Amino acid sequence: MTTLTNQEETITLDTFTRGLWKENPVFVMLLGLCPVLAVTNTTMNAIAMGLATLFVLVASSTLVSLLRKLIPKQVRIASYIIIIATFVTMVDYLIQSISLDLYNALGAFIQLIVVNCVILGRAEAYASKQKVSTAIINALGMGVGFTIALLCLGVTRELLGAGTILGFQVFSTSFEPWIVMILPPGGFFVLGSWLLLFEYIKQRKQQTHLNVTGVVEHGS
Amino acid sequence: MDPDSLTFIFINAALSNNFVLALFLGLCPFLGVSAKKETACNMGLATMFVMLVSSISAFSINWLLIEFNIQFLRLICYIAVIASAVQLVEMVVKKFSPTLFRALGIFLPLITTNCAILGLALFQTFREYNFLQCLAFSLGAGVGFTLALLLMAGLREKLELARVPTVSQGATMSLMLAGLLSLAFMGFAGLGSGHG
Image 1 (cartoon, rainbow over the protein chains, first blue to last red):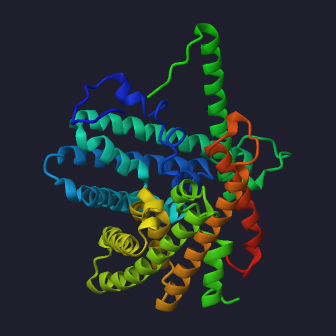
Image 2 (image 1 turned 90 degrees about the horizontal axis):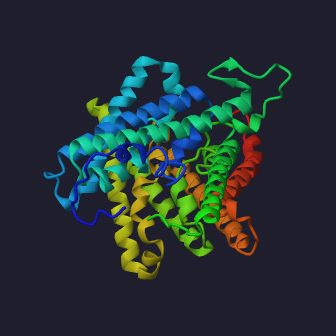
Image 3 (image 1 turned 180 degrees about the vertical axis):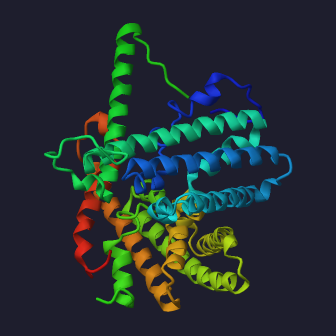
């Protein structure tokens, strides 16, 4: 990204979609890995975590973008963190009131959204320089990309680790669950495998591209 | 073993519920600064110090918050305290070891957004530890974090000599290694059994 000056982007489809694939916070930028690995042992937890992060991301990006001319440069990081912490507190109480089971399953990880680098990264690198509408759309894209990544891991881990998806039995009872997938090591292995898959696809694409045109295009 | 005893809390935080390998806290520095053993060790020690300071501060702040019945401000207070603690460490490191300051680079201020620190403060509040238990918990967590970082750095130094397929270089390989380490740490799960 080359935003050297305070250039404001115009809204294009790319503003939204880059968070989904090209700059996916988890699979490409490897940000915010703690919740990605910690709460994806079931699909339900992954969805809840994804939505909570999405909300905080969009809300804080909006506010940061609104206040971008008011916040002095020296104290901006502290201000961003306070803004994020406020929204996280709201989500924390909201989930507590909706479902206590879910709240207990996610544990401290809801409050730990505060230190999710994806959110602070968006506030610092994007929302603080852009118009409100652009910032919201970009944050939405990033949040959805993050949720999809969580879902990828959650579904894989629950399917392999318990043979179910969202609690419904998928495999027959003769399937021996790979317990390790629900346990911590499984998180590392599954994320590693997804990265391996994407890297493989990327290299295959580059290879065919090379064969067709004979030119390699380097992305920024 | 008594789950409230100081030894149990220490061992639990350092080994059987290792912050990085079992609870996935503090993964950014774990994957980011674990390329060399020396930097990894220093980073671990810096984090341990911040953990100790913020654990003590969080304990006192929580007491104050309960006294005034404003627990909903807990998260905001904790994060402010951690940010100041990191600032303190940064100043100390810059003064006494400029070389280390340069080696740690961006990862020093980033301790603020290290989930291990905030996680520590939140866990000790949820589990209602007393002051001594908090100390044991933060020390254990710090030792565990340093240990994980050192082990990872050692593995990655060796890995540089190995021939890895191009597809799985970089982050993928680090994650697989972390998975294996985590698997190894599962072996500690029996230590002080009776823990849920």
